[in-house]
Image 1 (spheres, rainbow, N blue to C red):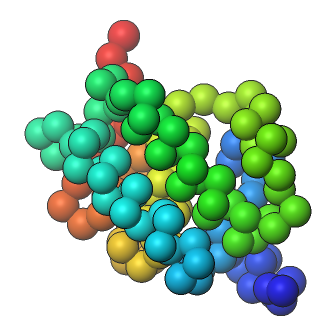
Image 2: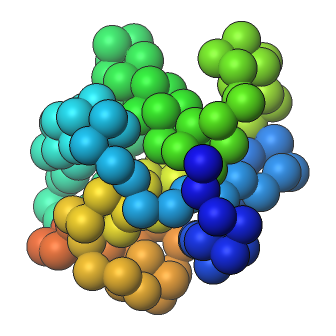
Length: 132
């Protein structure tokens, strides 16, 4: 069990108007999250910006998997079914990737706080804005 002080200090992800703490991930979560996160970052990076407009169903499933697994570190009682029924947006899920990348050690701490949706892993900078 994670001490409450660690949960209180952890960065948070907001989904469906609720905040979820994401403490540092352990190998159990990292082995699922990191490969999916790396693959998504590579596939969504266009000219140094994150562009989710070509996201496939399989990639979207990977995004859901990695966010869910990361959330379970700080919220172990979160059920997959409850997560799948959250009224959330694609941009919220993508923004969660910043916090998750930070909590896996793939990105320096504090880098994601510059602006929402910016700086996914080192050399990827841009916004998660979808074209109109």
